[in-house]
Length: 385
Image 1 (spheres, one colour):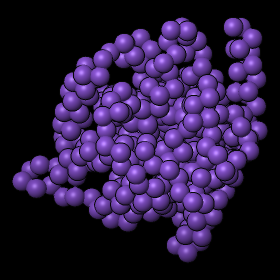
Image 2 (spheres, helix red, strand yellow):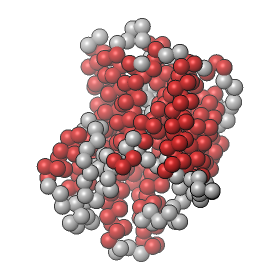
Image 3 (cartoon, one colour):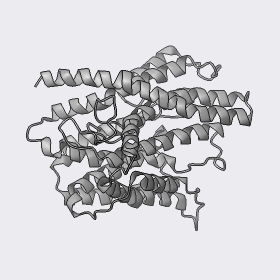
Image 4 (cartoon, one colour):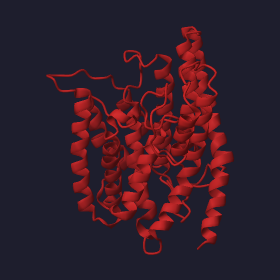
C-alpha cells in the first residue's frame, strides 16, 4: 500500500494515468503493475460476489463465486510482499512513528469515508422499515469505533458483523495489526524465521478452514478468532517471498492469464464433505497456501502486456476505493431485495447496473476524497521532517 499493498489500496496520489510507463512509489521505486492489476481483479470479484449473493439471498445453490471471500487472503499476501518491498530498506532513516504515520495517511482517509457511508446507509435506508430501529446512541457508538477501524457491538439487520456499518472494514483492522507486527517485530526477522512462522500459521489456517468447512470466517463475532489466522499466513508468506525473491523462479505470466487462474480457483464449486472431512475448507486452505503464493510470484516477474498497462494501473488505483465504499450501497440493495417487490428480471437488471455505479462511486472517492486528503497530509508530514 504506499506503495500499494494489502487490502486493495492504491499507492500514489496521482489522479491521471500514464499509459506508457509504470507508476512509481513516493521513493521512486517502480510498482509491480501486474500485482496492481490482480488486486483490482480480486476487488471486482468481491464486489460481484456480494451483489450476486444478495440478489439470490445467499442461497448456496445459486451463488456463483463460491470462494470469493478468499480474495481477502490474497490482499493480505500482497500486503506482506509490497510492505517488504516498500519499507525494508528504509529503516535506517525511518522511525516506527513515521512508518505508522505513512500507513495511516495511505489507508485511513478511505476508512473514514467508508464509515460515513455506512452510517448514512444505516440511518437513511428507505427499504429497511423497522429492521434498523436501533437507539441512535448505539449507532453513533458503533460509528465512532468504525472511524478508527475498530470492532463494535452488532447492530440489528447487520448479522453479527464485527464492523456492522461497513463489513469490509474488518480487514483494515487486521491490516493495521499486520502493519504493527511488521514495524515492531517482523522487519527484524531473518527469512528463515519468517518461513517457520508462515509454516506454523499455515497449519493453523488449514485446521481452522477444515473445521469450519470454509475460510469465510473472521468478519463476525462467532469466528472472530479466525481473522488474525487469515491475516498472518498470507501476510508472513508475502513478506517471506519478498525477502527470498532472488531465489525464486523467474516465471512470467501476464495479468490476464493470472486473473483467469484466480477466477478459476474462486469459481470452483463448493465441495461436499468426504468421510467426515470438510473438503471444501481444505480446498480453500490449499488455494491460499499454494495457488495464491504462486500467482504472487508469477505476477511479481510479469509485465502487464501490450495494451494492458493502463488497465492494470487503473485497476490498482480503484481497487481499494471500491472495496471500502461498495458495501454501504449493498446494504440498501439487500433490504430492497428482501422487500420482494421486484421480479427476477428486474433484480438481474438492477444488480448488473450496480457494477458500473459502484465503479463510478469508487472513482469519485479516489479522485475527490482519497487523493486530495493524502496529498495534503503527505505535504504536512514532509514539512515535519
